[in-house]
Image (spheres, rainbow, N blue to C red):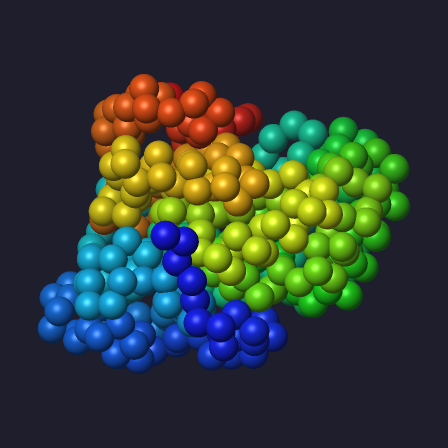
Length: 335
């Protein structure tokens, strides 16, 4: 059965829906029929990277289950404060790849533009949870500088919009940015990395889908879903709106301990993604960001899971198992 959020939640304007997101751990637990004593390792003070969970996403969680895989992705635990060798504040080398404030180039022919530090959900394994967004400076001068840098480098054919989450911008801001990118003659592709169609489906309106599709640039939308229950009815409708306007839809997952580290869940995720017109493209090994070591799955286990998945389903439903290594010229495929 496809999980559904409440009709009231689905009908809200996306900014209203975001305003009603859970920003307090106890409030979220009460909504799920849980108490602090049900989760012994709960972080008593997560002020530095506070809880943020849209109501739509919370409604997809199983009430009364402290081990719900969707809840585990967003619930701050005391384990986040445990030191872990090799886990750092900048696990993928963003600082070293910065060409201009908020403009990163790690791979040939592509550049990543960080358009906002805002997001609609705080995933506990986020590799940019410690990123110094405040140091980027005012948005418009930063974007002007980044666009000038892109225009001057004819080797760049693809721009990736990231953040934060780029869909946290208003439609008119997104349209203006895409229009300016489309005026750079050597750019051919626009890639947008976003979790909002999953956690805040109300964001994907018909108008937004049209804005993303009307540019001359080939548009690829890369969503981030880790578990089949994240792809409820509202998310499916949001993705359908994007696909109907011609956007190519891909998914990147993260392999997470006690969330999706079993072959049954991974197969169900791939099949549900295809139901939603999304191709399962990558499954990432966890980026070793400080505070997320409790999600780590070994390479041996990860490879075994991918081999099991290959034996159970069609090849196009098996994502590439990869790791991002700071300083490398591409993602490193593991299996």
